[in-house]
Image 1 (cartoon, rainbow, N blue to C red):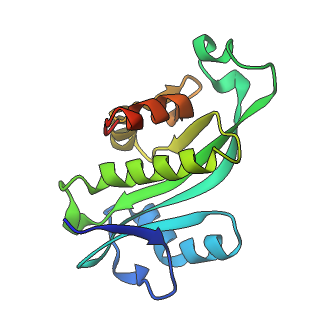
Image 2 (tube, rainbow, N blue to C red):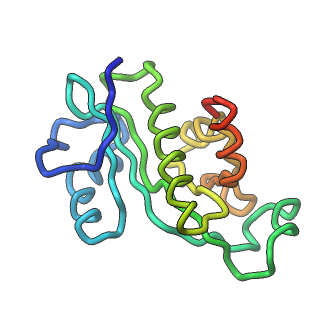
Length: 170
């Protein structure tokens, strides 16, 4: 499959995009470009011969130290929060369901976060799943649910870097 990832551009047409989750479709069609212009999120699209095959957004974030599982938190400095990156929204088009595009979106997002983390510290990558199905998807990629919010998950950047270096899809 010929797929390329790039920033969302004005020439991209989000109107035809549908992932089957109304909240994600609505955000992408009506607010993604606004969020990008306002520098609230950077939105990346995966493009194939059929157009937009998927998208994800990235933003800076902080993760409250007391929300991290104790076995990991005790290794961190006693700050109120630790720096993180947020994969705010991620979806693949229904026409590419079952092709692994979702996995490729996650890997591309992780690579971008790890590249940025060379200049701006990030202890973890955070995602908010919309439902249990999304939670299971992210858990299959190594993300860990926060004890207080099971649909908010995180992956330490060290874990992501090691997995990508080993050639793992996570």
